[in-house]
Image (cartoon, rainbow, N blue to C red; front, side):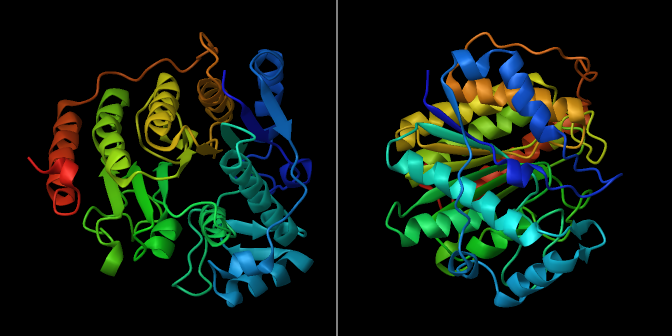
Amino acid sequence: MKRLCLIYQPAVVEHSFGAGHPLLQERLPRYLAKLREDGLIDHAGIEVVDPPDAVGEDEILAVHDRSLLERIKELSARGGLLDGDTPVPVGTYERARLQAGGLLYGAKSIMEGQYDRAVQMLAFGGHHAMRRHQHITFGFCYFNQEAIVIKALQSQGYLQRALIMDCDCHHGNGIQDIFYADPSVLYISLHQDPRTLYPGWMGHADEVGEGAGRGYNVNVPLPPGTQTQSYMRVLEQIFPPLAREFAPQLILAIINGDTHFADPLTDMGIDLSCYSRIARLISEVSEEVCGGRLVVELGGGYDLGVAVNGSCKVTAELVGYEGYEVDDPYGIPGPEPAHITQRVEKLLEERKATLSRYWKVFRA
């Protein structure tokens, strides 16, 4: 069994986007309750931790323009809207700092050897929050906690190189924006083709980074309808070779249930079994390349059953709890259409060809 730190902050969990919003607050308490009911907390060595320290303004400003910080702080004092999809309830500023602080605690604890891995289900996202486009953020996100944590670890001497493996169905345009010219962070994103899904204007295959960061931004925009076998084939052929050559000191993974075929906001086609496979592969690669140092964010997704069950399956893999099963009322979709399989294969070969310009592992 692995020593797993499960970050669960009641003060953050209470954050709600309001009635009718697709990002359901009840994901978080139901996730923890199911882990307890299924025996993972008691028998798998999972330690539930409520880190009390929020990130400071300096840590936020290492990533974001002050105008974004001040805008969120102002809206948080009275309540309001950041954009049409992203409400800012009273207290959001404090909760956003606290959630990022929880993730930073987990990462530091791993680097200091207290835990092997850490996992946090997010009350709200971060990977859409940008820097270079001034105050723009959206997609149920406030501050880019992934970037805040990596930058803080670097500035405090915990690491030099980090790999972010983003398996959210939506492209992490904010992470790309922040690290686009930075060769110390390798960002890999498997996501639904942005021509068919929000945010739409970033996440294309030809966006490889700039300056010293060329080759360190790896987008794999998958066609809608991509199912488990094709998804895993791409992940297995892109992520491990890059991780081995890059040799990060920490892997931060985002694993989100919105890639499931039942998700109401997306059009991907993977089934519930895929979440175990994703977590297992990332865990195995982390053992090989960085001593197992792995932080995982769980976004959940927008179908409550998938959000809870998929996240529990990921957590069981992270701690090494064998034989864990959950009820799967969804089953699997029908066979993947041949044209989807062919498009994925073509995309995979094209990505390898492009990556060969920057990475030795892809050169024949």
